[in-house]
Image 1: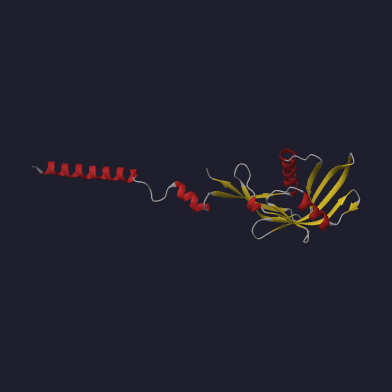
Image 2: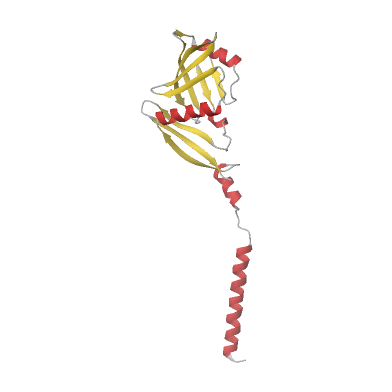
Amino acid sequence: MNKWKVSFLVLAIINLLFIVSVVTFLLLPSEKTLKDIRTELNGEEAKVPFLIRSQKDTLSDLINHYLEEETVQGNLQYRVELEEFVYVYGAIKAFNKDIDMTLILEPKVELDGNMQLLVKELSIGQLKLPVSYVLKYMKTYYELPSYVNIDPSKKVIDVHLDELTFKNGLSAKAESFNLKNDDITFTLYVPLP
């Protein structure tokens, strides 16, 4: 055989081996699948965190819109305003009359990202009610969501955001809730499909 034929055959064999190697590596499964990578991101169900910063007036509007759209208020109608404290203004229907109600709360972010609301004052009309008594009544007779816990002796309402998941799979964790400095920050967790 002449040397050109041998060189051509060697070059053809090298090209064929290269093509077979590339195709083989393309068709072999990777060490980690996309599902494995998503699971590694955030435990069992992968969620992407987004840091959300808001202002008092914007968050007040959002809370009130949610209350109007998502809750069945019946005899209880109320509105939330974020100022130096959280103010809940409302009206309770009693004796066929609307009676004004005001609830003043001081929010605090817990280390685990949950919220604690210290009840500073509760009044109906001009009458200031004993907070611990009313909270005990609410804990006993109101059907509260599972993520809300009332401690009448400490005059606090705990909101366990880590137990709250919205219909679309979103969840949240509080980072800061400083109303005096208008610094309200949450981490919003968006699930990956």
